Image (cartoon, rainbow, N blue to C red; front, side):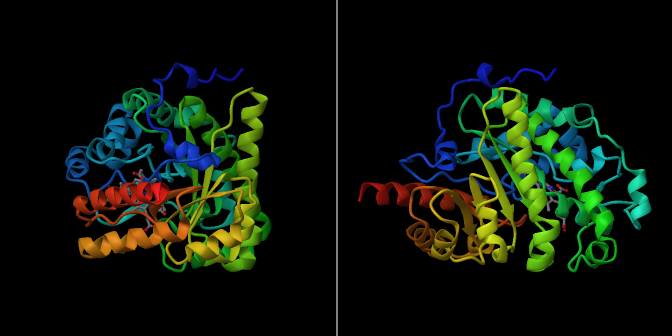
Length: 366
Ligand code: 1CP
């Protein structure tokens, strides 16, 4: 039998703005969080990172909790996101992943041919392999003391498949894309294996205390509309459906889910009908167009250009105001259009958050 949900044992929420915005309820000010808000742009993170290997931080609940809380202690954010990485899923499936300083993730033995699918763990015992993430979530929920909601996450199947085949970051993803053209059946087989793990992983995160779940399809754009429709969207849909079905069969309340498919402007209508309460947008989309294309039943999240934080302070505030005027204050969670860059001045994040809060309160009172 499934472990009972721990939701009712946690401290009472003092700020649930992000959850209310996700559910389409009224918000008195626009909530904001920042993708990659715990990370290398923070000196306190670099200090922790100097002492511990990246995946050691992920695998040690007290350390993962500590770095998750770092941006919450510094800024007036409206959500925390558990410190981890999307690549813990390929690790759980049996692949070795290293984090090379200054270079990013590296798989010493990537999947070269479909025969290599045989090397993966099947089935994956998610609570055994990823229980450390669940423990980090439960600990962090307690240590947050209800200040803000805690977001859990996973990579989407295509993005994870691309890393498993490329062996690390890539600009063309031509190795992974070659599978989609040469071995479509085996690609679907691999995507299905990853999807099954993602569903159990998200359900486990929610049972451990995650209050919102984000699915990162960071490599959606490179697919183009045809491959996206075949190899990305069906699995994104399966994840929202599968998570909700599992939660309801265990008599657990569902939590809002966010889909962030970067550069998938061609798929925006489909994404808004894929079973997620929130659609994350990168900065290449116009807010009003995105609203018109997604309709009234989803909340939008995003989408300031991460490089806008390099602008002089007055310019940054003007850009934030323009973004808020275009999205409006309801059914909206402010964020960047992708992760914050490691060389960013943390003071700029404070300017961003304060401008979002004060201008949205002004708009709501006008
Ligand atoms: O605060 C937070 O957002 C929590 C932590 C978090 C998240 C949500 C990290 C920590 N990684 C992620 C997600 C993640 N990881 C994504 C999806 C979001 C996105 O599109 O950026 C992706 C694609 C990854 C893979 C990854 N991990 C990369 C990109 C590699 C590439 O070139 O394609 C990199 C550089 C990492 C390492 C990483 N993950 C997180 C941090 C703080 C770091 C830096 C590593 C270090 O400290 O050495």
